[in-house]
Length: 267
Image (cartoon, rainbow, N blue to C red; front, side, top):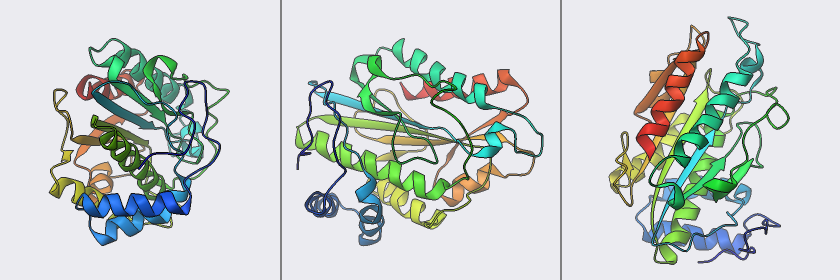
């Protein structure tokens, strides 16, 4: 299975997956041992997948995705009235900076997917091409469709990983979800996310944290920006996520530490 989109360095995909590609993806997932439930969930969001336009000509690829929360609470509509826009911008950009210092940097394809947008800021681009977040491209104002967007992001990972394997390329992945509250507005449930992750765990393709020297398993972390009420352990565990990172929203040092934890562990 290969994407029909242009693969040149400067070429952007003109359209999302079509039905034939979705059917191929379901077939690949079935052959890879996913349950029917997981396949149906991925198929339900597959039309939102924008294939990555970059393919590394290497024997190994590391797919790293960051999903910043762009809900209105990040901009100050929270119990503490704390605006964390710059904190999230800085945290995201420090991840890129840290990864550029890692020995794995040439293997990394990077994705930035906002919580309230189907169009990514970075769509599996080589690390040196990753666009930093700024106040011009990050303007929190939405709700928190955490389950829907996590499923969309996982589906994109599954698609890209399958494409890599079909190119005889080993692939590892890591996802950081950033949120300061519970889900609001999703059509899917925490159980739907958990079903996909449980399938990955059963297939030994998901680690509870990560091992940088591993060549084929993935990791997913939830970074909870504390609002004083949300139990982020409960939120993460209901989704099948065991790796939870906490940050005090009123302490920029705590937020930097939280983002640095992911950067240090993933590569």
